[in-house]
Image 1 (cartoon, rainbow, N blue to C red):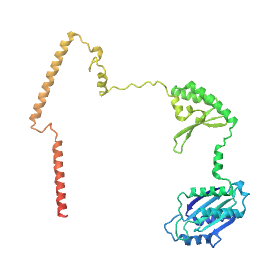
Image 2 (image 1 turned 90 degrees about the vertical axis):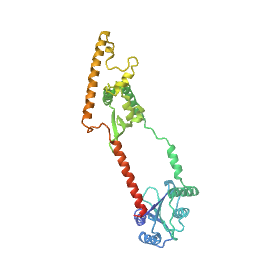
Image 3 (image 1 turned 45 degrees about the horizontal axis):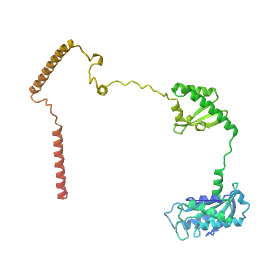
Image 4 (image 1 turned 180 degrees about the vertical axis):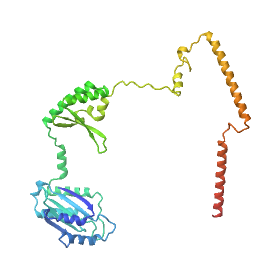
Length: 355
């Protein structure tokens, strides 16, 4: 036996459902109720539930499932006894509730619709109410020697799934084919990957990508001889990410970096024996005859540079201060700071006056 419980707001709809013709089996119990029809039962429950205007879900829906092997053991009176005992252990003595059985499925089950507001205006606490219902169902099952849902579930989990010999044989064939071509083209880049897929298709093996609703690839499936496998079933090497890594070229040739002025000092610093040089090392050694000539050229360049600097200084001084190399950033910052201090002083003065 299994029990479920949930708080609901649509009490009228739930009552119409459990009394629907074709589903209704036995009318088991009407607790704290005078009516016997769904419409009048709801009106009677509503009179009590209106005592509490803050509660939104004012009804409880309880389902008690009976195992097929236990149906033949139970009579109608025993179904009534189960409904009353279940409601009592759930703490519904002071609440209105109705219980019926349904026969629309393979196994008979019990439906209970209860008013969550008690006759004294108290709201039924639904904290972990589903766990509470499952525990009560297990207790009653043990007392009545009925099938316990938890034990059936545990037994099913320990049962081994029957293997299909044809599928296992096909899987071994796919593994042999896939590993053969993977070893052949591993580490050969995009070309090898294309040849890998081509040889697989020639052998009757197809690989399809699995995509999410957003269009992203999240896996692969492999088909062969009418059987479909997840890529991980064939081998860990054939998952989407692993397969991409298997075809990467092992030794990549790094592209040559373009030389920049920022990179040049770092490169030249590494040459500790020659130091920073503006000329190639092949031309670093100059004959003594050319040394005197190069020194005279350097002296001439230095004289020209000093003459140009002097002329520039005379021009700047002649303009009369219109061109001033000094920056005025500090003056602007000082003015802004003084302006800010004055504003703060004015605000304090206004606060003192009560403005």
